[in-house]
Length: 146
Image (cartoon, rainbow, N blue to C red; front, side, top):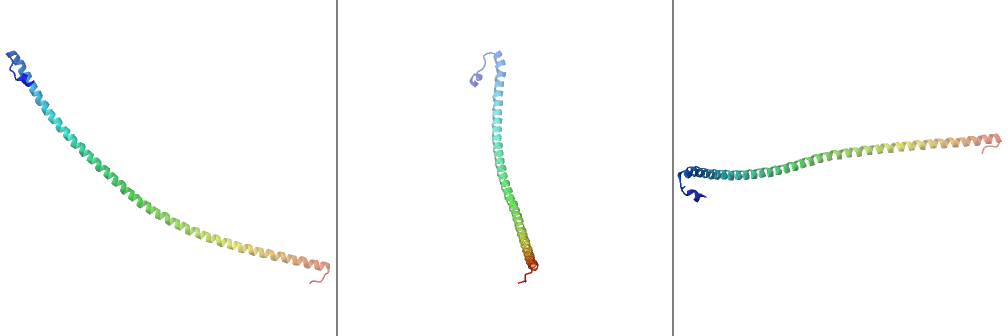
């Protein structure tokens, strides 16, 4: 197309028409070239920004992972301290349970001794009753006591 434009027009009417058209087309080519350069520059900047965003995203993910690990470590410390509290409570509970068992053993022992005492008293009273019944029978029958 440049070759055709380089040719001189045959008459002045055509040159008056084609001259400004030729200049307009040349101006369009120059503007298009500048636009292409600007688009190329914008694409490069977009790629740089994409790279920067990807880098920032990777750094953020790395940081989020580190925070999660730190929180896990802290929660493990909290769990350990809670576990120590639970173990102390369990130890106290075992001590109290042992104390209660000892008291129950003492109560059972004392109630067992009390039962043995009552059995002894009742046994004595029954024997005494038999002796009195036997003495009464001997007296009524007029038999001598052995």
